[in-house]
Length: 180
Image (cartoon, rainbow, N blue to C red; front, side, top):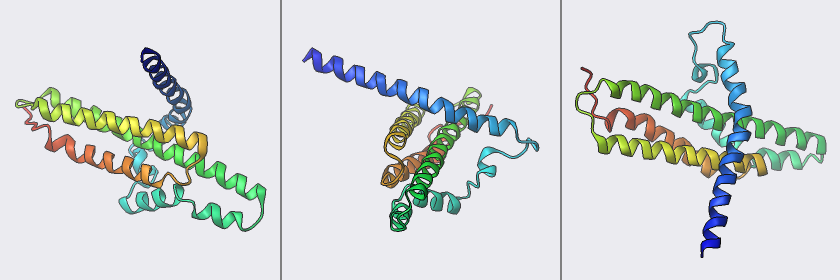
């Protein structure tokens, strides 16, 4: 029994380390792009076209397998390889953007919570639990996309996006913040 626990703990630690190492490359490039923005006023979400409709289309196209099936019918291995590489890059960028957005939401919420008069601990714990769930889903999605590509990961990506929406909506409703 202890052996199974040790193996499970080792696998969890290995997965966490793998996510950390793999993601650092993509987060650095994303944050670097934000710092290179000459206007300074536009956020990453604005540059990336984070309109709800655009985000839904990106989600459905990048994580589906339709394009790969179409390109496979063309019998061009070079084109297939380019498509897989580009879709993987786009999917990893999407996941990284979601992590960065969730971090920003939590940072803004923490700043608002510092000045709150009637902070509700249960609401804060629920929000933090949602944030941890989102980060775990993003980590899993990151590993799966890196290992196998984004095709077929549409349900997991949609669940990740739904969790982010719940955090976005929950940061104000669960906190009961009243600035003082």
